[in-house]
Length: 211
Image 1: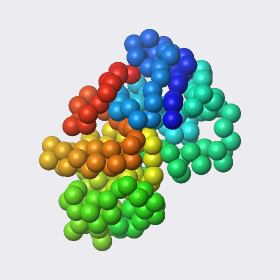
Image 2: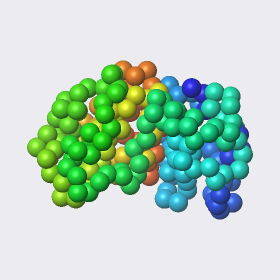
Image 3: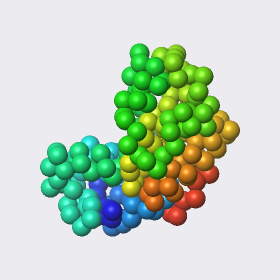
Image 4: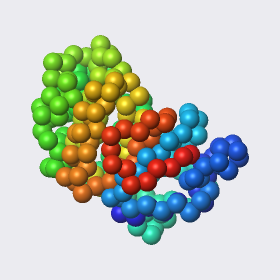
C-alpha cells in the first residue's frame, strides 16, 4: 500500500502549527512497509493524522490517496474492508470496555492474524497473564495499554498505527512491548507509524518527522 498526503491540512488547525510541520500542507509519501516515528507536543495533530489514515477523520483539505486513489471517494464499505484486512490502530484512549475482563476485551477481536503469536504467548510476554480475569477498570493505565496492544496485534495488517502507545509504561515494559511489536510487524511484512510526545522507543524507524 502506498499513502500520499497532498497538501493535507486538518480542519481546524492553527496556521502556525501548519507552517512548522514536516507533514501538514506538504507532499508527504510513504509505503506501508515503512517504519515512521511522528513526534509532536499535544494538540499538533498526531491523533488526527492516524485517524485520517484509518479513515475515521475526513475533516481536512487536500487529498489523502491510498494506492493512487483519493480516499475521500471511498465508500463506507470500502473503508471497512481496508480496516479489516490492512490497517490496525491502537487508539490513544484505548477504547476498552471497563467492566469486561482484560481477556474479554482482547477476544472482542477474533485472532485472524496468523503471523501473530497466540494470545497466551503475547500476554505472557507483556506480563499480563495474571491479570486476564480482572475487569479492565481495576487495571492501571499502563496495564490497559498493554491489553489494547495485544488486541491491535490480533488483526491482520499491512500498516500498524500506534497512538502514544507507551505513555504510561516504564522502560522494562516498553522494551518488552517493542520486542513484541517488532516481531509481529516483521512477520507480517508490514509497516508502522508510531506517534510520541518526544521519546524514541526501541523500534528500527526508517524516518522520523515532527508535526
